Amino acid sequence: MTKLRIKKRSFNISMFNIKVSPKESKEDFTDLYTDLIKRLQSENIAINTRGEKWMELRTLFSYEDGKVLYGKLTYYTMLDGTDWYNKKTKKIQTVELDEDLYPNAKEVEYFFIPEAHRFCFINKTSGIAMSQVEIFLEQGLPRLLDDTKSVIVTKELTSDVIERIMNASKLFRLEVGISYSNNDLSGEFEELFDNDLRDGQIQDFNMVAKSFKADSIDIENSKILQAALKLSQSNGFAEATIQNNEGKNENIATTEYPRKELVLSTEGNEPKDVFSKVMRLFRNG
Image (cartoon, rainbow, N blue to C red; front, side, top):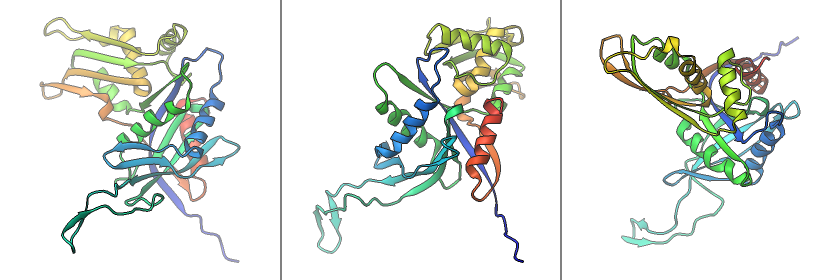
């Protein structure tokens, strides 16, 4: 009897936190997030992300009745038929292009988990830049919301850069910009701070802390700064000026350090395994 060979897959995912606001404390936006991503694909929303480059969700499938929406994210070139050079005739001319065909297509696999409102895609060296996916989501999703709601798209950032700021020998300046989460896992004080932003209907919260002259900010004794910095990993950004290990001043922007998570899977089980990874990271599951 021939044994079936299970093909193993391992890949890195990059993630975006997608949040619709304002959100009342008892509102459940899971169905709203599901509907947004479905419509982004079904309504053929295409976004110009750079130059002649456009992006759209080409396919969409559902795992376990909507636990995961997944498919292919496609990036292609939209050409203009005017001002083409004819090398043979040495003339500039207009050409007729097929309106449904676009060259230079690239694709990556995406996974959206409505319960955790995370949009993930497989990050490959030769794939699509994270910045282009960010533009696509930031510009595409608001088209599907009415004027009473807005959407916030933030990169998931690595914890290493947060810890580097926290553990710096000297911290001279810290700027943090955050929005409230949608009930992510967090520490006790971060949760209190997060709830305060939500209850106060605060969409964006920015703060700047500066030390006295050459002194260092004592972040260990500031619960507010610690909470804001930790929340920024999934809900915003931080910029800091620190003294590094070489004794030199260094500026750090956390958005330059996107988070990557390794997923171990097998062919055909990618949605299930991405779901498990994301829920372990951001929920009690």
